Length: 266
Image 1 (cartoon, rainbow, N blue to C red):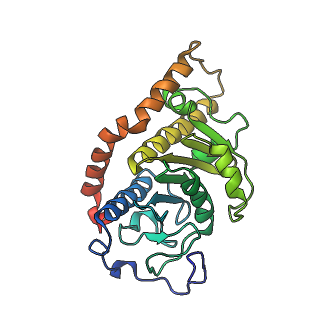
Image 2 (cartoon, rainbow, N blue to C red; image 1 turned 120 degrees about the vertical axis):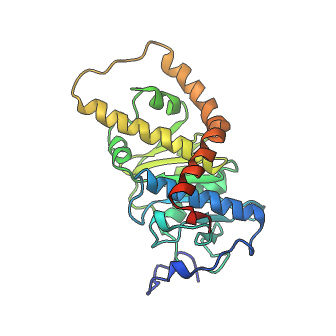
């Protein structure tokens, strides 16, 4: 059955799913654990949108397979074994009782197929992210968080719910070699060579969006950084968010998850 088949009638019992740890390579299992952790972190920070939006990770190896969320589970329920492995055509590589979100397949397959460095792709529908995506000027250099991602941001115009495979070409063209994107009137997106890098980038983007919404709500003139400072901070941010910060923050985030609920590892 094609993974995009949305005709599943009865929700499977996710608590009864067997562990795949001994059925996949150690590299794939690590990718599954990291991706499941990313889903749990998004839920922890309140960035999830019920069962909607999506995060994906490339499975190590030459096959161009990737992992995506089982459609129907809340992010707080996702585990390493429940993630669905599909190919670039949307076909399940390993049997799963779950379908995947067709819109997720459209957006994520486009980036995974055309960016070898995009091992993880995060797409969110947060309140503040969507608010900024609906503002004509986009992300403003109001604060350090915004400046840190300002040199690495792209924009993509809204074309409706992402079900049209033709949109993939335009997504790829718009993101280019950037690592964060505002999907206008829709939400936010980040890519990374690891789940850690993608998560840190979306963290900074989402924080910047929240600060922009609050700053503009104040109704007063905002202070502009001195000339050259936004550009300097953008260069610093691109370096810091390319593995440097993630290498320190990711283990701390995993420790946080392990204290809250370590079931993502199963």
